[in-house]
Length: 261
Image (cartoon, rainbow, N blue to C red; front, side, top):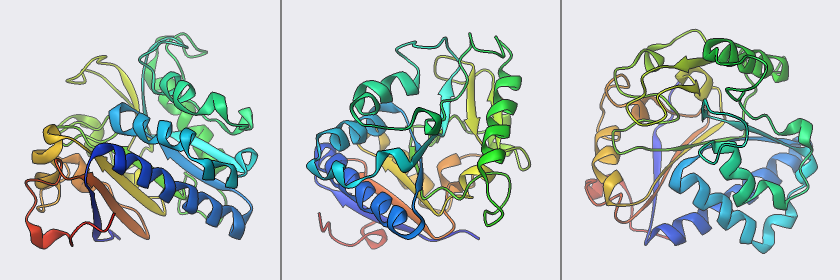
C-alpha cells in the first residue's frame, strides 16, 4: 500500500543536506534503541553524497552504533572495484571510511571485475540473494524491511537506476536487476526494483537544484511510475520528499506547508 508523500522544503541544498543528516541520525538511533540494529539504503549522486558529507561533519553522528548498522545500495554503476564513479567509492570517501562500521554489514553491489565478471545479470542475482538471506520472517518478502531507503531524483524523474520506460522500471517480481542502455553513463548498472524499494519502512526522495524542479512537479502530480519512476517510490510507513527551494519551485503551494527548517 502506498503512503501519501510528505514534503519538507529547505532554503538551500546545504541546509537540506544538514537537516536530512540530522533526521537520518535520529531515525537510526530510534531503530537501534527499539531493535538493537538498523538498516539503511544509500543513494549516490550529488544529493546523496552531500547528505553523507553532512553526516560525517555532524557531531551527533557518534550517537549511532555504527557496528550495528547495515548499509545497502539502491543502485550501482557496473564498473571495476574502486572506480571513482562507483557509488560505494564515493560513499567511502564522503563518510564510510571515517566511521567504525562492521565490514560484514557494508553490502556493496558487485563490481564488474568481481566474481561475476562482466555478467551484470549474475551480479544482480547475487545481490538479490544477499538481500534475501538478510530478510527475516517478520519482513515483507525477499528483502529486509529497511528503516530508511534514500533515493536521489534525477532531472528525468529516474530513481536508483530505474529510468523512464526502460524494462527495469516495469519489473514486478525480481528485487534486483541489471540495466543495459541507461541514458546516462555508464550504460550498464545494477539496481533495486520498485518492489524492493517499497519493502522499506521509510523511503526518502532527495531533490535539490533547479534542474530537479520539473521532475519533482511531474512525480508529485500523479504521473505514472513507468513514465516517472520517482512516482512509484514509496515506503510502507512513510514517504518523505526532502527538497530545497529551487527543486520545489514548480510545485503548487497546496502540496506543502511553509518551510519549517
